[in-house]
Image (cartoon, rainbow, N blue to C red; front, side, top):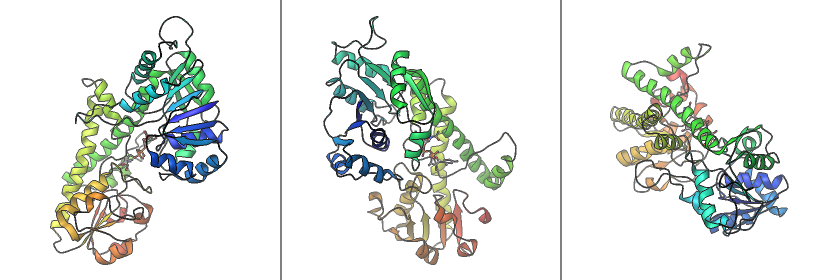
Length: 415
Ligand code: SAJ
């Protein structure tokens, strides 16, 4: 089939490339001219393992072409962002999804399949169907009226881990949520072309909730670890030791505390559940609050350590939102480092091997970006914010004599 992928970001572009590799002709759509031009040159605008080679290959073979304009296709895959609305109340903003639906409605024809992949609050696929129904009264929609529908609509979330996207897009199991069972079968046939994992068929609302639940599960579990770390700080305990020991229990598996939860999914998606059921989603809301509070706790602890070492230079190790990636968006490490830079200026040295310059918010500060060797020579205070392998590998003798705040537990000997 001819496939149109709308949204060529962290999920849309790898998905488009994998569908193209499976032999489908893919028309990718993005609002950004820059993104479109980059892809049509066979290059990529994001960092992801092995994605550059794959995009280059499918563009060269003429299987993937990007444009700012929608084009007719047999299957439409929507992978646009669903951020928060700007109301400060964590309300999901599904306007990008609805804009994509309105665009594809202009070229939709009988027999087409529309698949939503964007993380979305429960009911979004149906809302998308309703919008398409309004735009295209000439087409019969699934789940509306008695006749045979003219198009199929399904919700099929991805669950890939940044850094392993290509591998996980192919091998992870997937939920295929049809607006009707017939829609699910249609979407299943499409995913079977390029997914090696198991494709489990369900309804659209269950699939929408499943995606949110997966990330909320992880958020709640990380919140447990982060709350433990704050309790341990209060009681003068080594949280890493306590977790190591507790995890010896055959049915206990506590996650790792850190400086808070970053990324665009785990810190966002649980709010979509809270928004849908505010009275009931107490634990899920509290987990979000605990993980956000952890970031401020880390900042306060870091300041206390810095104040106790006047005159010393401070190395903030890491800006990324997690280990061994170059993604600094929504990163607690970046927030902590930038806050310290604003307060302590040129005493703050940031080490981030995945950055070539400090992000914009550091500009007004006198903080500098230096390499790990210089940091170990010049800085008397080390604040480990990201568990990059390069930081984990710093031996005890190179940290000796320095004041250390290890927010990730990367140096078990330092406790
Ligand atoms: N973190 C901790 N302690 C831990 C584990 C993680 O503090 O023990 C922190 C990380 O440092 C990071 C944040 O949590 O700041 C999130 O990292 P992550 O590796 O848990 O997840 P993401 O955001 O990279 O990807 C998640 C994944 N979801 C789950 O594992 C349930 C991924 O499978 C999803 O596809 C992705 O969200 C998404 O796009 O929704």
